[in-house]
Length: 218
Image (cartoon, rainbow, N blue to C red; front, top):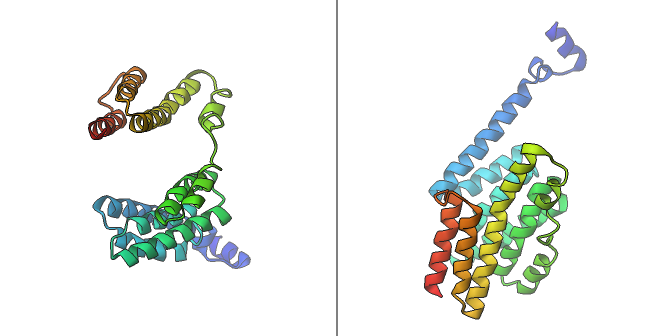
């Protein structure tokens, strides 16, 4: 019956049974796998080519655009080439903000583009954009715990500790830097040790190592 049905609807048998969508999905996953592999190896020029080619198959895909933007900013080259890549990255991010539908991606881009503007010398624009971002109170993490119960609520609360720990350590580091108070670094370390029982966890070790480096520099 499949050939008859395909003929009736004017499509191929593969389209009728969804084979084209499966193949497309597998291709998309392979593109993202390859991007991660290249990124880990520092092959950012290769990723620029990969993303530009992939966007012809998946036009305006938010994730691919983000990956193109990241590759552009990481790519090497002359001073002129880096400046050109940075401007293209900004244009790509602005495209995501104008036309993107994925709120998670758009929120990440709203944050990242502040730093792109700053690196491009657009300091006033960077600050203005940063001031539009949501504050620490009105966040997803602070909202969802009111609507969950039991283990899901516990898991959400624990997951929220990581960004909170990052934020606390960041701001305490800034106070230490600006006010010359090494005690802030110690407070940040104490908070991390209180929040997380297993300090060997990679995330916690990363923050502690960063704090130690900043403490030494201070």
